[in-house]
Length: 379
Image (cartoon, rainbow, N blue to C red; front, side, top):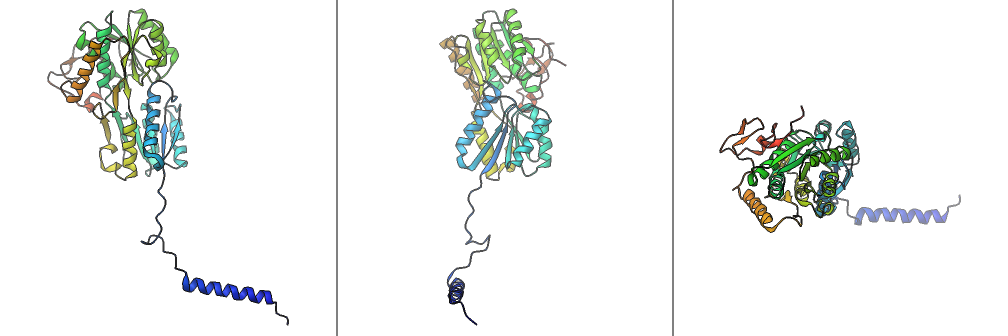
């Protein structure tokens, strides 16, 4: 019998290597032991839903910029996925389910009508944190946040009340939900505080962003003698540009749109979502989101920096700017409360009694328009 010398050599080498491994190589530490190598830091996927486009000079642009600011602040800790033009229907559920399939552990449904779809998806996915913008309902893994932007809307009304020549202001609104009614009232109360003759005519479009309806509403209000237009719409471009073309003034909302109206722009109420988005996501990363107020209905205002006054237009005199800035400081210090009573509705009924300063929760049940507002609530 012939023996293959190559096979013998190879066998000897293999045995030797196994013996060296057994005697001289340290055993791998079991998973979970103190000697185990620490896993690489996990990246948390965060999803954002926008009801419109990210460049609408309004609500969605403000939310989009907030998401990019958060992404920049948290850096490699997060991966952000976004979806634009997501309707307030079952489609929102589909988009959120898709984000979860992509690994999302935190989801921001940013439109008011995304709330019910988010609550449905939250029931199915208790491991995911849902953080809704402006909602009035919560669950164990869904919280809501919003900013007291009515404070800045009040200041926009002060500016309009000082600048109007006709004493007729116009407000193009979307839906008669509490936050919209709250802003219409704040605008009129601000204007009335410096101009008792100022009235605010309101038109509802029953849409967050319909340029055709917006243009029609703007033209109708201008035909009635309105010389300052403002709005609570998601996309603001059409209305600001319509005012500029007609040679009247505008007060913006959601985002700075001053570039669209170099002559007629007065100021506006704008969101600064980045710090709050960062705070929310960091709390989730730290495992502390459910322990604090973020898990419920969380509301912030000027003092926290979530809402700001847009730059003044070139037509606003220095004395008016100074007046508005002083009132802004008074609101932040607590000296001025935009909704301090007595406040009456259009029928003259007292809605907020003298000496009463309602809470944000109480204001978020608003279902009326104040004295001085012209127009009715669609029922």
